[in-house]
Amino acid sequence: REAARLFHRAANEGHARAQFELGRCYSLGRGMPQDDDEGARLYRRAAEQGNPLGQFIYEQCLARGNGVPRNFREAVRFYDLAANQGFVEAMYNRAILLGSGWGGVPQDDAEAARLYHLAAEQDMAAAQFNLGVHLEHGRGVPQD
Image (tube, rainbow, N blue to C red; front, side, top):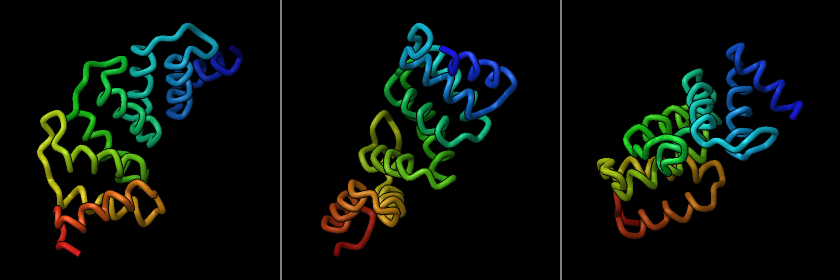
C-alpha cells in the first residue's frame, strides 16, 4: 500500500514512470482495488509522456480491450512509439498485426519482415522464427 501511495503522489506530479507503476497497481489490484479503466488511463498518461513501458502496455490494453474499447489502429500508433524507442516487444507485436492484418490494420508483409528482422537482431527467438517463416515463403522479402 505504501508503494501505491508514493506512486500516486509522484504520478500526480507528472512522473511518467510513476504513472506507469500506479497503472500497474490498479490493473493488478496491488495496494488498491483492481480497476482496469484506471490502469489504462494511467498507462496512457505515461505513454503520452514518452514512457516506452507505458506505450507498450497501453497498446496491449487497446489491442485487447482492457480498460478501453478495443482499437487496433490506435494500438499500432502506440506500438510505433514504443518500437521507435527500441522496445523489442513492441516491434514484434506490431509485426504480428501487420503480417496478419488483424483488426482492419492494413497488411504489410514487407514492414512486418523488417520489424521481425530488427527484433531478431536483438535475440528475440519468436521474431527469429517469424522472420524465418517470412523468408521461407517470400512474404515481404525475397524467398530464401
